[in-house]
Length: 156
Image 1 (cartoon, rainbow, N blue to C red):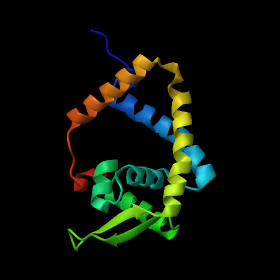
Image 2 (cartoon, one colour):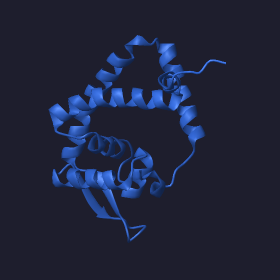
Image 3 (cartoon, one colour):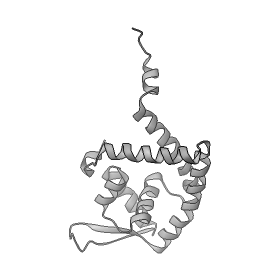
Image 4 (cartoon, rainbow, N blue to C red):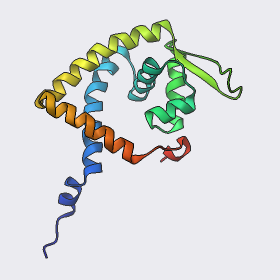
């Protein structure tokens, strides 16, 4: 029985490859919105979720982004400081607040989305339409299989 090199094992470890691919794609897109809109990756993720879902609590943002509550909290504060998001009382839970995009935040979101979609198209142009659809389906199934997470468990 031959011993495999650790690097070979890591290269074949699918979670590692997913992480590396995700980081590469995110970094490529982040370069553009950092240059054009002065947003960090965490800030854009929060904005993207708010743009899709509307007003959410920070706990809900943590669940949707699968990010730890500390970076989500920082991102929310920076977005508020820049006037891109606003906080309002949560009528259904007096202990939390809802965060939503302001008109300016929605305008920035609308400006970023075409750019993000263009970069997505460029990055995935190496795949056929059928392969892209299959990849989306497979990633969705893997994500579903991973299950749900409590926001508190997401800390490093």
